[in-house]
Image 1 (tube, rainbow, N blue to C red):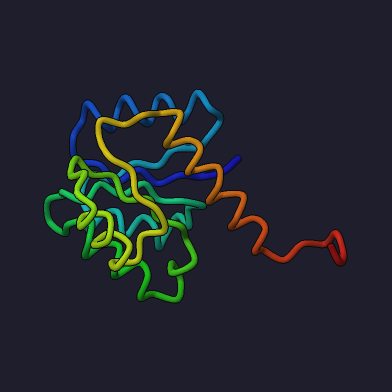
Image 2: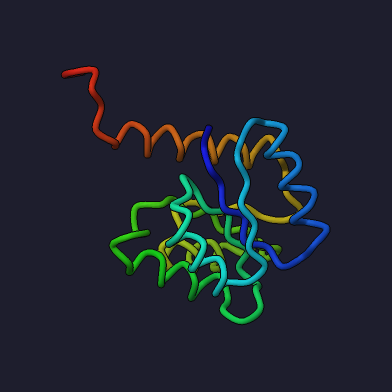
Length: 133
């Protein structure tokens, strides 16, 4: 089972998304601000992080930069979640180190497709004992 860290300060968004991911078979970890999100990523080693960009304490941009700068967490795919749908916001998320970007309100089917693509990509990059492909 893949472990997803959801970093989201809005309780309604956090509850809705975590329940829907749980029903899809993911183990969901929750953080309510960027600082606790960085700490949880370091201690829990999730397979993927869903990062709200507008967070208290430490915003999603800086939290992602810190995760990508650390050898312990730099390999973890991060999907930025933001209500800002401007192309400059997407560029800013990718520059901060996010692997993908999705807008709020969340379209679950679209987000799940991105999650699954990144998880299968990171699984493909991991060493395999199946021998040469």
